[in-house]
Length: 362
Image (cartoon, rainbow, N blue to C red; front, side, top):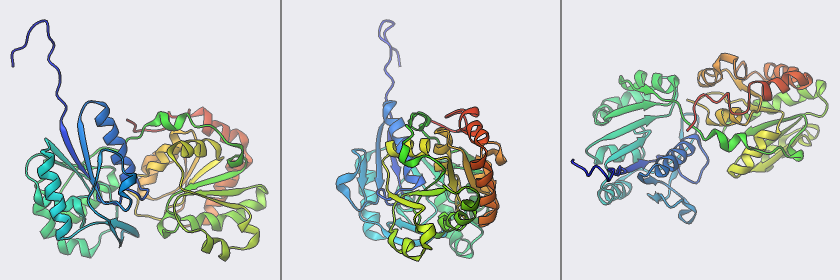
């Protein structure tokens, strides 16, 4: 298009539709990734609309459109809050029609969710991002022939890690390019240490009621840690009912555990700046580990189970310590070594640099 020599052409932002399969108001890595990506795209002049299930529509950001209330179903060792069916399909089609998007970005389009419905309903440029990492499952093989024609509609396929890519290739015999999740590292490098969360503290953030998040492994390690580090305690942040867990604990252990509930992003940054160690004892089903990237950006020394996604993110132990998954004794031995050696902790928090250990950022 010809333009005047004196008037530069203004770039036109794209109209981008993003589909989130999981309940927006439940904390999760996929939701966090989509929120950061949306804000980044909006800040660069694009028009973004995110379609997502939601329980509380009044609390949604301006760029998120509710597709309806999700239902909870067991999936990949956790509970997925998704939306599916003819009513959801009608809402998805209406959103696509009204949005007149230049491109659609569908997250987890291979699971029964509004992302899969959008892939069925839409035509034109579509990008799919695959987050899940799981072992080979016969159920997915069974529905593979139905999913493959839908997945082939995607113009491009992204996997957030090699573990997610392997899951995709194993189950659907299709490939994807690996693009790790990004985070705003500066949001976590500016956290302020709080005295009430400091000391010989081990931090945990997540949906602690889900067994695969591994809180039980960390709790089992605590009595062993206390024998060598008498002031050690665990601070847990995240949604869930803690009363049942606390009642079932030995009183000596119970007094060393604090449940904070859900944190704001600012509180999370302070939390990660405060704890002596951040522990991710997940037992499986993780494809990346955004919380580990956030912990590294905050400069928090990290210990994680040796599941493939975490080993990859931590550079096979270069950027954090790994322990044998589901082995509380091994976890305890690493934690004791770090907590008793102040120079080790100082080197991990400062020597590698706040924010410098995060390999992917926006």
